[in-house]
Amino acid sequence: MKHRKNLTTAAMAFAMVSVSFSAQAENIIRQTQLGSGLQYDQVTDDDSGSSITHLPIEEGGASYGLFARGSAWDESLYFLDSKIVGHYMPEASIEITTDDWLHQWFNGTSVPRTRADQPYRLAIRVSGLLEDDPDAPAATKQALYTHVGQNFNTSYVPGTNGEYTLASFYLGNSEPSYTPIYTALTPMAPTKAMGVETFTVSSLSDDQIPAEAILAEEMIMVWPISEAFIQGVQDNMVIRDNLPDIVVNYKDLYPLSMTYMQIYAGPPVLGTVGQEIPSTNRWHNTTVPQNEIISIENWETLVPRDGVYTIEVLSVTPFDNWQPERLSYVSFEVDRHVNINSQTVTSEK
Amino acid sequence: MKNFTTTLPRQLLALAAVSLSLASIATDASAQDRKLPFRVKKDGSVNYDDLKKLARQAPSRDSITDDELAAIKAKHVIKYDSLFKPTDEDMSPPRVDLYADSIILSDGVNHTLLPKRSLVFIPEKFQRRVVEAPVGKLILWPTFKNINSSWLRVQDVSLPIAKGEEPLADGIRRQLESGFQVVVSTYKNSPISVMPLKEPSELEGEENNLRKAGTRLSRR
Image (tube, rainbow over all chains, first blue to last red; front, side, top):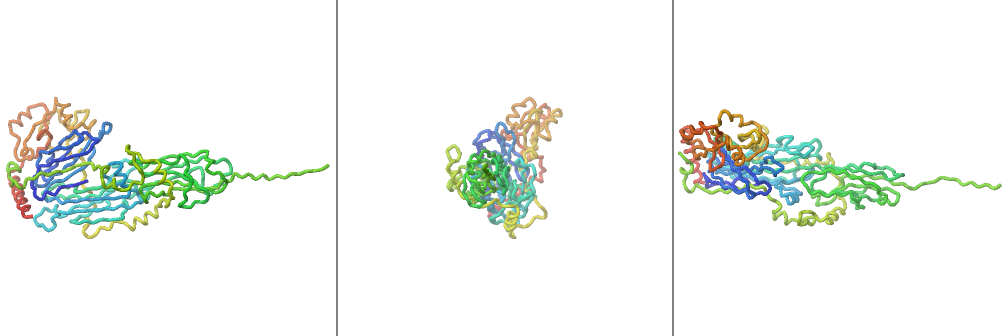
């Protein structure tokens, strides 16, 4: 998200608000004069969404909020973006980088995402604060930095649990960056963190500018670590009769992932490349984690000889350089050899 | 001061371009330049053979456990430096809620959103059309106005009137108040707030602030 322009030579401006997105055909651009609170709405109904606002910007600056209605079946109103224009407005930017850059490439979203166990990079830049100007309004001498979290519920609907503050600071001109850092969401279990973190730099209110305004804001989606539960065979089980049907629950598959099962002879050894079990692979390129139930029946051809075998559930994600990660495994023995103890007795008469 | 624009030096007028956008990362050249682990077809689907090759690699690790992850996260908590001054209490970022920050006008079936203070006049019989919670579907203003033209009308106002620097002319106000329609203030066909009329002392103070701001800017 790009943010406010610093108009060092403009005490008053007419602003051209350019909106570019494709899906929504009806949008509201709400201009709010930060000093007085005066509001001005412009509705655009074209996809290019370019509009000239006729309302001059007051001394205190103005904020612009872009809201769009969903597509035909979705009539919710969504807040998409905001900008601040005015003199004495500091500039701020926040950048978050994760290893799942393909999410943004595939899905055309500006919100990066990661997984609960994966590091990411946070870079903050604040400039233009008038720290040494005694005449400058208080709100232009420092900004507010906040880091808030919001957990998703089990149906992955954002906004149901409310935001909670993870950190809040007053911040001057600075340009820090942090890496590696991990999600600070506070779930029941670290591996199941699921929600959104929001980093924000906002202006402070004062006598001249009574409204706080967002200077820069970036979010990161966090999804839980995948799991797999194998049912039908257990560790160290000896299978003497017919091979049992196996049911495997893939849970919380990462939205961009390939998950599959393999089998090999011998006890479990990480790094072994076995035979892929047919019809167990699931490729997902979507926006939220996925669950799948896999059923394996009539798998005699996978265990041609008696002995110890290992079945593994593996998942390939953008993390660890697309190297497969083992979610679960089970090792068992197939023993179909039948010993017939018998005795032959002959007698002569 | 009747109008901000007439009191400012010409050189202080500027054209500001503000771009509000949904970032389209899909066209981001820097992303495309990165090496993809698989081929992507024109329709956006992924080459399945390439995926299968990824799946033929040796697994490199087991999923991390809660205890292992907690230990790693404890070592990598963000350590804000001294430039970050803790707030006295936890603070939240400002949040945008258009519904909470608007007038919600309903025709009993659907609703629309308007800037606060944009209702110049509401006849007694239509007081209930201003609602606290949305009713039905959201219909954006231009369409809502057309659907409900029998009881809705607009009154274009000047900027000084909108900013509370000048009153709405008595004649116009009397005419509006003698009608039977809800009146929405507009500026160049778009709804706008009409701020409470300012006292002369307030106007004088604002003018002084502007002059000071202009002087300060010219020094920088």
